[in-house]
Length: 297
Image (cartoon, rainbow, N blue to C red; front, side):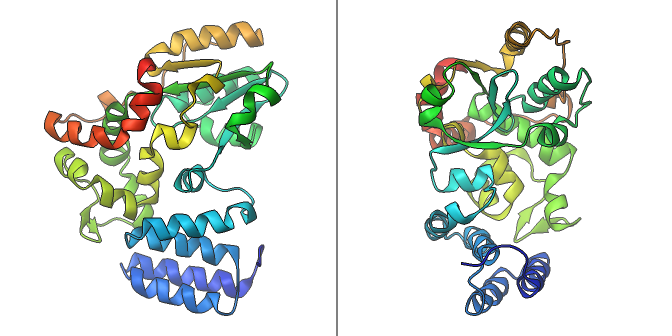
């Protein structure tokens, strides 16, 4: 299978992206499949996986991704989650022997600001995701081997109730930063889905939103799909309410006095009326999260 730069493949993918902007998902799929007849290229297979998800063919997309996963240089956390991989993307501070697993909408900007301060003595000022990738690129590690391979490292995870994560995503990413418009351009809707839906519509159509929008899917993947279901592989697990405890633990372990850091309080970004009945329905789809990590929420 081909990997790396290929001008013909790149041109095909650019055309496919243009078709997506015009909401021509099936035409984009046809284009990519024709290109695959000539170029057995990882980039084309990954794009086909994306299109299959958008078309609702999630099982086929997962099977495709599982077949090429080991050929992908740096799979995304979402791709690992899609196939139920036993690997996760960890932020690793080698000298300090810290391993942090980032779960979206679980205070990750604040945590990475803490880690950035440990490394540089400076504040990430809300840009810590990018800055930490420069300082400490993700390490793709098998979770089940953490106890043996990183026995003397501090392995930690911040978790949050799935409904609180969804509320945070809705307030900040949908209402405040308009993330979906960044994916397909400024418009009212895409494939019949409002780019800034009200909260009820967001919950009612969540499965379809997850299929169509990659950024939304990445932020709403189940905690168990990102971190596994064995909480025992981590040395510290706490909720976003335990940030002060985490800061104290990191300060003690690194010998660096980490200042209090607070970023992006989503409750201040937008207001809405929760819908208990809809939230209860959505909660069932995150049952594995409650079983594996509910004691920490």
